[in-house]
Length: 222
Image 1: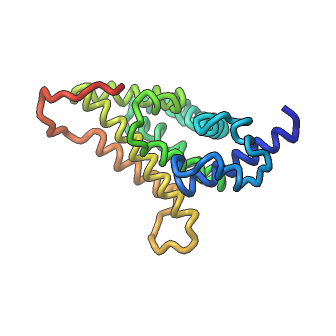
Image 2 (image 1 turned 90 degrees about the vertical axis):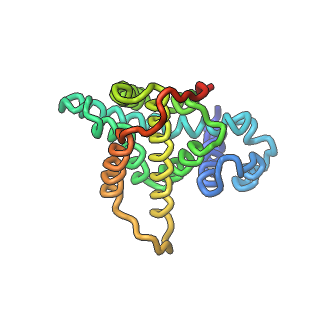
């Protein structure tokens, strides 16, 4: 691709990122992205990305390798310290990279908001969540799952991991919105305080005793 083509692609991606963060993935059409980007070629978005899924995948490729790097560093640090079996350390590996990422700039905060919207999709399945989770995150999640199944049925352990992932992304995305809102009257903690408190809360919730009736079953995730 020519240098001009690369610039056009990056600009379209910048515009889509901003619109998706402001309004949600499903509320923005490819036509709106093209118009907002002032692209004269009516097929510019389709040429560079194909469709909405291709555009979203391009955003994943822009951001997730950097989040994966932060997560791998946390995982390696936990292994070096011998804390990689401790529940709170495992939760930190899963949660802190996204919270740290939003502090890096406007584009990074936009991506965290988009992740929050993605996690809220009503037809989202486990396999789709796994597909965008870095390797270190998968290892930490698997370790937590093994610990949970010592006291919980497998289906409940899986459901808690899924709810934890969704809740943490939602809450961090809300924190990103607060940081970007200059007129909000709602108090918000500094990001370090916010994320430490969030990890403490999620650790307690994840390992809370279950009152669900034994033998109750749920359909497998498709």
